[in-house]
Image (cartoon, rainbow, N blue to C red; front, side):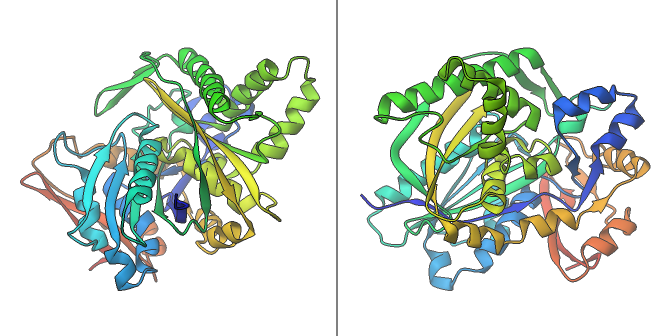
Amino acid sequence: MKQVGIEAINAYCGETYVDVPTLFAARGLDDSRIGNLMMARKSVALHCEDAVSFAVNAAKPIVDALTEEERASIELLIVGTESGVDFGKSLATYVHDHLGLPRSCRLFETKQACYSGTAALQMAAAVVAASPFEGAKALVISSDVARPVPHTYVEPSQGAGAMAMLVSDRPVVAAFDHGANGFHSYEVMDTCRPDPEREAGDTDLSLLTYIDCLKGSFADYARKVEGADFVDTFDLLAMHTPFPGMVKGAHRAALRKLRRGISPQAVEDDFTTRLGAAIQYPQQVGNIYAGTVFLALASTLDNAVIDREKRIGVFSYGSGCASEFYSVVVTPDSQRAVRAMGIREALDARYRLSMQEYDELLAATAELKFGDREFTFDLDRFPQITKERFTGGRRLVLEAVRDYHREYVWLDGGAAR
């Protein structure tokens, strides 16, 4: 059996952010809840960005680094999202086109709330493992742009971002433990999107379901992997992070169940040691839905001490619900590969929005309605952002919708190319 895993990983979490304490104050929210949220900033999409442009901008550095022969070996493209732009046409078709991928390539979109990215990743791994061709690769992208719910406690955690991963038999970033996958899934109405502009659900039920799935999926993992222990088997953990406080609560509940009599201080120390690195980027970005678990994984690889081969336990959850617990093995080479992508530097370089700019941006984004047949974007609407952010670099943005077809352009220094 060939070894399969992640060869390369990259994040694109937008060009702007809003400060979470500032958002709390402007909305009149109770700032005593910031501590439970454990959020500092959240990424915000520009009015001319969508799940397609985010996906392409995340994947382009990975694809551009490949040789022509390596690019031709990408035989599968999957985009996991709950921010689709059409009920029939997959947004993967747009992504495939703007990345210049070969036509001899399967492509499609997956949907299962925040689990869709993991569904895509595991399918890609299976395809690569089963391929009779040496060097076969698959490109998996998780991309979501949240629809903020202003003046609620959900708004501060809703982010925007995409994670791109190249899956191959050259797992530089992370090697999958073959067959080490635990599942726990059932129907529940914890959260849903009944229409493209609205989110609904029960926050308390979602938290309880998340905790139940963490326990259940690990129990299934332990049933399949002899001797697996939630604490001793994994040097580090990376978990789906709607907001870091939710991860902390779920970790505490799991440890109390699996380690009877464990002290509160021991729980706190374990969280800091094994999950402290994983939450650093989600604290700066917010919930990016399908890609959040991979942002946590990238955050772990960028920020943890990885001075030897280590095993990471990964927990993925999607409302509705589906969940999976699996594990990957990483090395110091993994850390070097992730740090070379400059994720931390890109997050630090984002433009800080004032509350006025943030609200104006939300209003501009809302002008394009799902299913609009015609629309043209004013790409100069926020010059204080685009002129600064795109100088010296290229980003794909949405320019127009013409007869339902989305048309994208590359911006460089605020000018379309």
